[in-house]
Image (cartoon, rainbow over all chains, first blue to last red; front, top):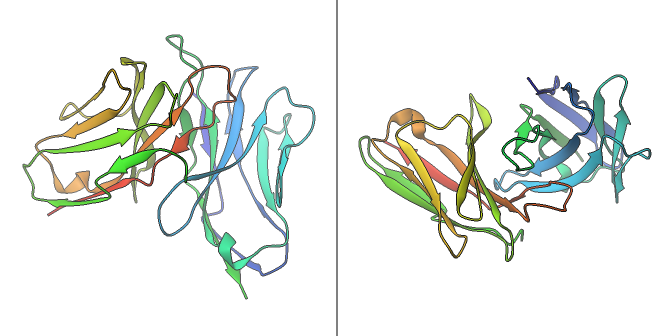
Length: 118
Length: 114
């Protein structure tokens, strides 16, 4: 069964520094997608970044980059130049295996709570 | 703003009652997903609809049901509510094909069962 593991329940980072949030995954599929979402205290889930299993380059979106190490089955999120507004829960997710003709839903990890200190 | 609209945003009710949560997906999105987020269980997939048809079921209780209407909006019905049903319920949508698969989430409906 597919699984997402986030081993850091909470992280602290100083404002303007970079931080890495860990994510490992388990799947037997050759084709899969990995996602990161941000959930601020207000509750909404905000899509940050996507990495396809066949993408040769690490995904980047502004201050977010995904450190994809396929052999190690890891997909760590790197946030550069942290800002106070980055304080939130961060979830790593994987697209579930195709079934029934659909592309499947997303399986989420337990999340990491990031706190940015001024 | 993700383009996904959920109502109500907050709901307080009593055990044994029934509630209906409503979701309007992004314009043109055919797939709708429902998730439950609780402190102890994290984000749990409940059910998925694609263009009006049920496509996948997750950890959805028999007391819960959902449907997707011809205009693509969806409703999640929760009945015989228990204290443990208190949670944040998310609806998410995506086009359904030809995309990378990211889901666009609504702001959630926070249900409190007293």
